[in-house]
Structure formats: structure tokens, C-alpha cells
Amino acid sequence: SGKGAKGFLSGGKESGGSVAEIPAPAPAPTREVKAKQVIAATVETPIGFSESVIENFVQETLTSAITQFATQGEIKPVVYVQPSVAGEDTRLIGIEAGFDSPTANEQCKQFLRTFAADHKALAVIILAEKKSVAYPQVWKDKTKTEWPFENSEQGIFMQLDAFSIGKTGKGTERKIWFIPTGTSKNSKPREQVELDIEKFQIFPKLLRPDEE
Image (cartoon, rainbow, N blue to C red; front, side, top):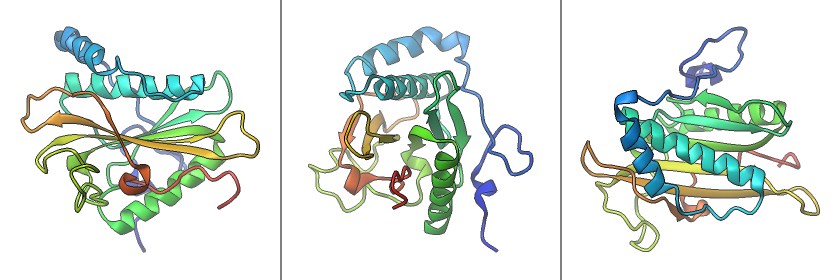
């Protein structure tokens, strides 16, 4: 049979088919100052999401991503899940194999949809380095306006799926950003660039209010 959801998870412990949750990375003390400088330069521009809860979730995730990249030099594909219940901790799910192939991406999508529904997620954020995405390579066959980077540019995709707040009828808001990190090993993250979610999504919609 094909690879089940369990095969997409990395880090943490697994028991009884539960999700493998991985702790947020601890900054390396020797490079802490550098990480803060990178964060200050990169996170200064507001995301522009109006709902404060979602905006804070996006900013905290972005800061975590920049911190990890600045201190460790890489980010493994991971999903942050924001619970809808106040006081619950954000969940982290490693999905290292989720971009290996069309089949892997589809199976991972189904797993994440189920997990988000079961845990009544308010929002989810997917982080994946461009070099980790064998499928879908959404940057290919794009115009310079759509993808304003060289093919050799590395970086981090950050996709948000969130329930709309305060609207009549449930809906979802979706955005995706690319955080360029340069072409050399020692490059620093630069300011995030928002892309067209319909053309650059690395997962289809994960939150489905009306059982779409």
C-alpha cells in the first residue's frame, strides 16, 4: 500500500498513530546576536493581516523561521497549527516527505486536513525551503513579474490557511510568502515577498469550513 500519513512525520515520538510533535528550535547562543539582527531587519515589515490573533500567529511563526534559519542554516518542512481554543499550545508537525512526489503531497494534504478538522484549528502555516520541494515546483514556468527571483535563488515558502474572523458565514483566508535566502550557503534571509496563492500554493486549501 502507499505511504500513510505516519510516513510524513519527523521528530518527536509516535504512539498509537498520534501526531509527532517537534519542539520549537532553541537558538544557538553563539549566533544569537546575529539571529536577532536578521529578525529585526526581516520582520519589521508588517504582514498586513487584520485579525490580531492570526497576525500574531503569522509574526511569531515568521520570527521562529528566521531564527531557526539564522542559527541552524536550514528549516525542515514543518506545519504550525494554531488552535481555536484559548490557552492551547501551538502544535508543530514535521512533514519532511510531504513534498517528495505528487502522491506524497496528496496524502500529506489529506492527513493535514483531517488533523486540522479533528483539532478545530483556527489557522495553519506550512514552512518549507525551496530546495526541499521536489513537488510542486511552483516557481517554474512563471513570468518575471509573478516570480521576481533567479532560478538559483533559495528561500523559504510560508503558506497560511486561516479561518476568516467576524464575517457572515465561515470562510477562509489564504496567503503565501517567499523569504529569499540568497544563492550561497552563508546568505541571510531577506524581506518576505507575498506571492499569488492561486499560482504558488504548495498545498491546496487545508481548512474546509463547509466540508468542501
